[in-house]
Length: 198
Image 1 (cartoon, rainbow, N blue to C red):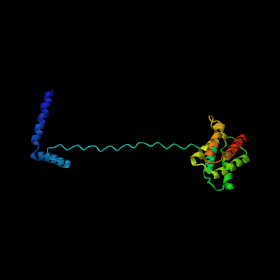
Image 2 (cartoon, rainbow, N blue to C red):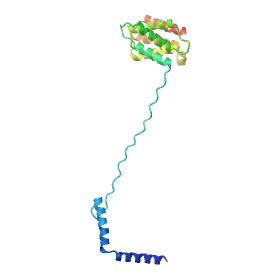
Image 3 (cartoon, helix red, strand yellow):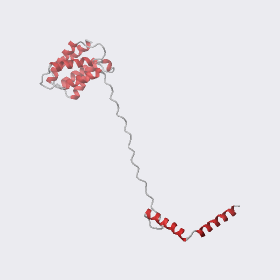
Image 4 (cartoon, rainbow, N blue to C red):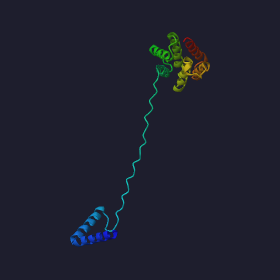
């Protein structure tokens, strides 16, 4: 049966080609030529395969920058206090308004509801301003000084720190600037008094 179908199909193709005139073959040849011309290849050659365009490098997704940690009011006050101390210039008197702002910032930097009395804070700030006007600390040492002061005033914030060692650090930092031992001890005594007055 399959053989019969194959013979019938071949016969139909042969008959179809007999009825197709010479014009039919010319049309087929012309289409083949047009296709080759469009591809730009000479007759009888295989057109080159166009390479795929290079893949665009994938840009890595940049993670969103971390949100800055929210500072507590005490941390903001401590930062303002440090900036105020760092701004004191040698041999320039510190005006009362600046002293008041420094005192307010220092008192605000103490954690908890038991803030030291303003009189004790004013005395310490006055001594600090006198010391810094004599021998100011550079920015790095000023930051260390304020951190030591913070450790004395807020011991719960630094559970591993020992207040006596923090006081020694405060004194040493003041003396590295050339401040006399007597003046440095005066500041340290005021810090102790402030810490004990809470």
